[in-house]
Length: 311
Picture 1 (cartoon, one colour):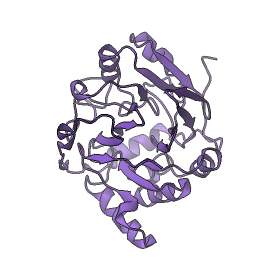
Picture 2 (picture 1 turned 45 degrees about the vertical axis):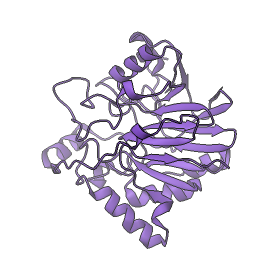
Picture 3 (picture 1 turned 30 degrees about the vertical axis):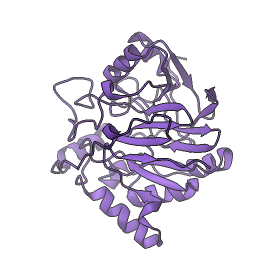
């Protein structure tokens, strides 16, 4: 099975040619990196029995729901890259450091791109708490095991696991995977639907717009809270299949039927051509166009603490 290559639910691998990549590389814009404001609200919060979430940066959230503490797509390194001296560099530092984190029960990883699966961060988290369980897509478990991270499980779409009374289900999204030149789509990608006893949360990972989110709602119900990417979408001719823009991100929220939505995957790394502050501006315009309040799909500040109300 070593030659197995995964595809999206539309049976398309979303392959861009090397020529397309060169065309983008030679013509791409270099947006001005702007540091967005971070907060240190988490420092003033000591009641870890409360239900809350904190955006640490990019796609990394600390979530505490009904006594289960989850960390999503942990990236604490300076670069989203296989090397320390090149590749996308952080515009802002993580709002929290690994040493600041409470005891983590579950780490979820959406796919193996370097801005979502960061081995140095995962190794430090595993060393800090060997009981932490790492949930990864099918094909990535061996990578973690080779790096000494043993407490792992890997999943195909719609497979699930129950941890401390919460069910974690791996769901399809429209994306791709690779960490090198020869392993494209040899591991899977997706989102994580987390069903706690009295609350449902969804982390969308990375995705182009597709009917996968309608299917997720049909199979698993409407999330109370969804975390949805709004950045890394320009230019559209190159990025559209794999990254939603803010207007499409809003449609993802509507397809899911989420009660509350929070933006991620912007303001941390300069990955594509849009300006740093463009995603929240376009999201605001999309909300206005749909006649929806800003509270339906919020832009958090890194380090901001949001208390969660259970059903």
